[in-house]
Length: 210
Length: 196
Image (cartoon, rainbow over all chains, first blue to last red; front, side, top):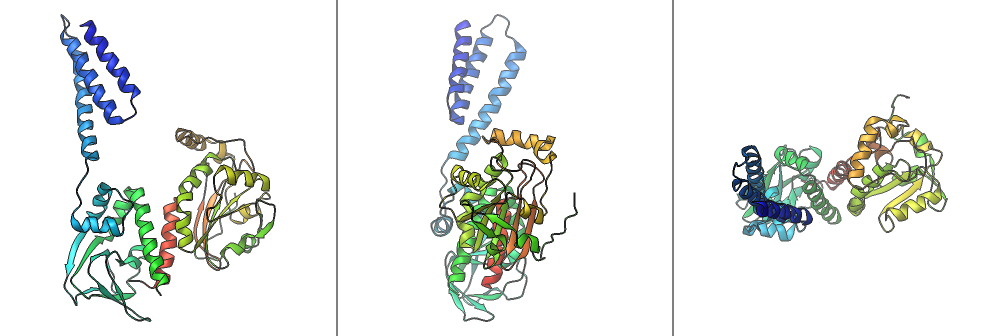
């Protein structure tokens, strides 16, 4: 019993010395299990101490499970990987997937009107694959393709779009409804900063191309 | 405390546009020059050894390039001497960043921007609570270089001098989220680009 008790405390000591939270919890669980064994080896096992240790063990096991799940690499679908390469280069796959899943992929046929000038748009769009024509009021039409945002005027200012947008080829876009996207970004400041950076680059490119 | 008269969408008061500030070498500049040809983000720091200001700068520093690309000139104003400003620039690793730095030892620009000057903002219970939170993040006040009771603030001034955003810090550690200012710059550029 005494050996198991000392072994458990030695394991706790080691757990406090490691930096990685997963290792800390794993060693703590090992220490907790050893401590429990030492309690059961006593002639009169102390039930309150056993109960509390079981609670600590359960909490740690759940946390270990969540940590392992968070750290597990996740495979990206082809369109997700395409956007990761093209637009969201700084995001980790798990962050990217969380951001993309606030929206949905939508397909359009050539000739479909995606956006109508002056008509309120409740979504921010990102061209995933294909090309579209943007017809501005006072300028020549321009063509946009993979990785270009559409609907950013409404997203950033609340104003209706200043251009018509029409699919030129089969077009896949990612459509984020603005309200859920804003709510998600408000809860995730790092992703908000990333979104601002990519929108800023997109706008700068559009201003240069004017 | 005098009533606040600065309003969004209003022109910057003459007293602020004409305020004279010093660069690190002691040269005098008229503040209004910074928004004469581009939008400007004007950050008023507290004293140069303020833990909250260092925290604010840590948030602002990585986004300065982004603001510059969006056509926004970032300006930092403190209130110690020009020499203290030069020391502050080195300590905060601001060299090489697109950030103009000035100091306003007379507090004329602070007064014109109607920023708070208050002892409670420095030593009141909420200020002390903020100092404790900052200390947990590894940021502690140094020896004050400037006015200890002057609080900071953030202005976004559109090209030509229209106020787009005003935040008056009430106490140490109370600063405007940098992302909110970047959002303003993005909105301004989106409107300018005439995008969809």
